[in-house]
Figure 1 (cartoon, rainbow, N blue to C red):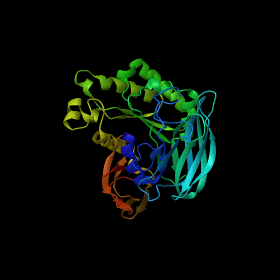
Figure 2 (figure 1 turned 120 degrees about the vertical axis):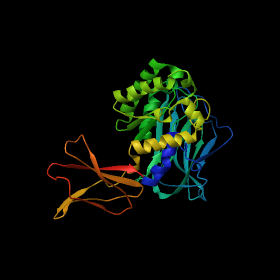
Figure 3 (figure 1 turned 90 degrees about the vertical axis):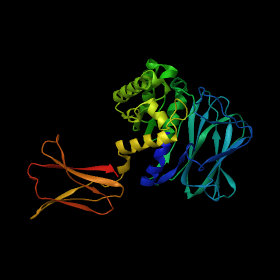
Figure 4 (figure 1 turned 45 degrees about the horizontal axis):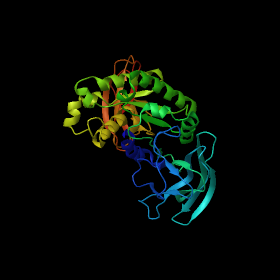
Length: 376
């Protein structure tokens, strides 16, 4: 996914603060389960993958990159769905590879499907998490092991191959909204190929319904809609262009960001020639890397938490502009007299020290200055 290939540079820039639901975090939360655990098809409970735990079954997660299988955390959580078939279960923790200790007894029963979460603050340490079903069939979405006091990113990924928006929106509203509220993301990246599955009218309507869920459950979330790359149907029609126009219109209606990841790839034939497809429809990792790089540039992820302040000092020699710099970023100093027409005075590659520019030719009384940041 696009998100997967954004995780690493974002973590390099901001730090890594843990995993949520364990998906697309290779080796950090590998599920180990008893043989009777199964994975239901999309239904009113949930549309993405989850674990169904019959009585006496269990599932636990291990970090294969750590000697004890643990992840650092100061808070752990379990996301699950209660329902008529649910019963009691235990949530246990292992600290630094030590014995399992029961931290909470969960209630997986509800008269109708309902999204729930057990959240437990813990002392900062390394942990594993385990769920044991005591009775009933308990439906577990996944674990959360995070450093809540960290300023790093937490990564989550919701996906299931072949699922369309009709199936997603068929999930009970008492599940979908609460699950999102419990996840409480700061940013959602939406990328689906939907037109062929549900048609243009349904796609537009479903996006509006999805926005309604988001606005009620996570009103402060930022959303980026991806205009998907070309595929085989584009060899004879404007299929992808049609889908992306619908998605872009929805983004505009709801004040969201939209990134065109179709036009830069030129055509389906070019996608094939460059080896950017897993099959005749779906992008492969090489393509997703390029898409992630586009978001990194266009949405300014490369400059997150970078000091962008600038000072101008008048000296006998002229005006001196100064600003702090960071590595891997180029700084362009522009000036204008009308906010519309800009001239670049200099561009400097950041090295972690302060930059200075002597301006002895521009009239300071009528000029406006700005500092632009672009990735190296």
